[in-house]
Image (cartoon, rainbow, N blue to C red; front, side):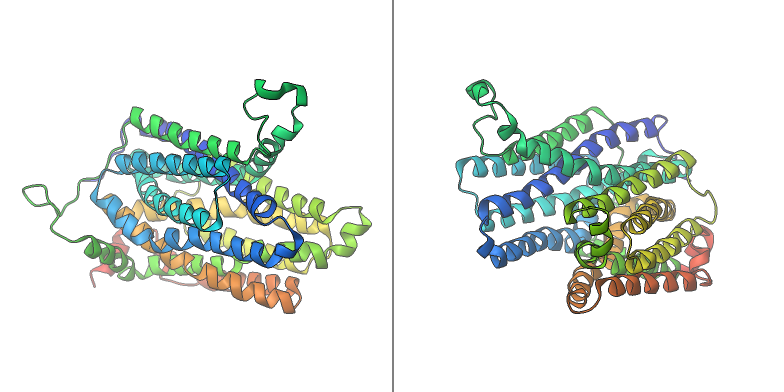
Length: 453
């Protein structure tokens, strides 16, 4: 019997989405604030550049490695336990971790090793939260509305990319902006900067998410392999293996996740290459226009963020394709790859901004359709472990891609490196338009039949 979402399931999803959106913005603010803290407080001197670069790298690895490689375990756990409770516990844990960070900052005792340890704890909690949250969509939202729900989440990430840095920068500068005579009347006036306040706000958003979850009903699926006593005889690691086997036995899904692996190969180095493009490839044009490096970099970032919002609003309003949703993945991917080629070769700031805008607008559309495919075809009781294995396969290439492409961009023309990655992405997507396995990924009956062969 097909699963039927709760009568008010989409309304519940919207409530949870609103709270989660605030938390995403809060976490984005914390990421920005920690970068400022490292650069301005822990390693402020120009001669500390090597230490600062190492600090950025270690902190990013401290978050990325547990988040990516802990995903399969988190997904299996989400399929064995109440997903609402997992989200409540992880939100509360991250709120407490944020408060600990605030305390260490205010006491002046926060060191890099502490920050990395905190990042590892936060990443572990985030991995379990994402596994439970991702697998809860399909328990609340009917299949027909899944692309719309996914578009809403994609819009959240795009809004955060614009709002979080600006809001964090304002709050960090707030103590210095207050008049001296305000003094002790304003609680933040005595701070050197508002970095602890930013992280405290992030903690508040985590606790807000916990409160919202306590008030709503988020169902978890009943596993089909329960014993008569309600126990799960299969081990946790067997659950992890089952998620991998589910994908391996379904070639169309394997091709779909492979397509995203190539996408991440092309996109992962953007954070390293784009500043190099602005500094070197766009130098003549931005100088002629009177743009500073910071202004041009901000312009490209805002263009991409606005494009992401437009794309998210488009798929949210439209609802996405109801049939042949794989084309909602491949066509936007192909266009994004072509736009990345334009971005890499462009010597003009405004052309790069247009490429950034339209390229970013493709991402919510393709991600929403992909998520809808996975949610519609993966049994709800398996979604936690399957989605986590899928993320592991798609994301594992990102550290390698960032390091290798970043190294190449340091010795070669960064524009050529970025364009070459975009060309690889576009060619691969073009080939997938003729892949008979991938094009039938929407056919659930055929997909299940292939898995039994």
